[in-house]
Length: 337
Ligand code: AMP
Ligand code: MG
Image (cartoon, rainbow, N blue to C red; front, side, top):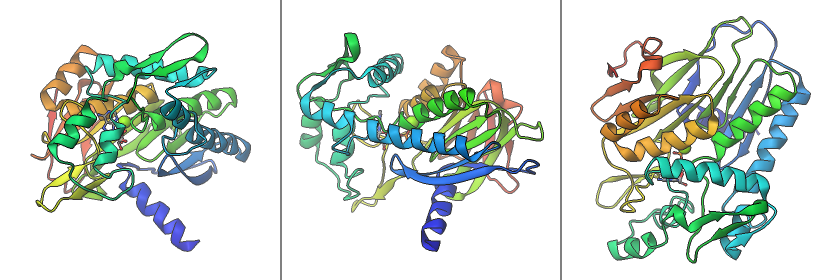
């Protein structure tokens, strides 16, 4: 039990963001859970009933969206190539497909079989050869997912979906909706690297969120303040392995070539009012690389981002440039764009 608590605390530290709370006047209720292949921690300045509602909602979504749970709708869809009467999944897929399109396929929810081939699902890591990747890539194309009337979803032959890049963000949006309905005005939810900063702190101040240092994830590079935002981080340090060739391979795959993204970006944090958008774009901008990510952000100013590069640069977009501050002793250089 004690062991599990320590494991949860360490994992939350490695999840990319920190809550730098200065004081907490009202007594919060908090709870931890394991869902969506990560550890989550919920702190609500509210009652335990609301905490329970959020916890069961996250568990419900885990069962709906998991690609590995044989009872989930996503699993059934992947195996039967069609499913009906799944309005919520159909709506989520429609929105996610729009983001796949707008990011020009940098986000592609059909890349799961490639992720699996690298061992990121079984944790049995390996380097697939180029002909294996070529074969798998024939089935990577989000256009093979079709959402029709009455929650009918169909997949073209060979296509499978994996919502790992957006599920936590969608969970953050559902939690926000539940908090609206239950009058929860102040909360901080860490859904394993996707943080929902609800309202402001009970003392009226903004939430202070730290960005993990990819080379020492228990430490942070810098922090910023925000209110009513969902902050999602995708980092190469979250899941990776070192191959026999000595190279490091991370869990975010470039759908264009089937290889783990390796473009100098080590972490991307996206801050917006929508969990789905933040989560989808943290993954997509990571794949796009610095230049394309900046272009995309300029063309879509409904979010802010912080990109960390292997040259120890923290590239910060306009909307949070004033609030982002380097941590003491950080060897990163801020570049404001
Ligand atoms: P995130 O941590 O939100 O960046 O999501 C990463 C997870 O999404 C990975 O563990 C994979 O399961 C999946 N994934 C990896 N690369 C992509 C991609 N380019 N598009 C969509 N999903 C991806
Ligand atoms: Mg994501």
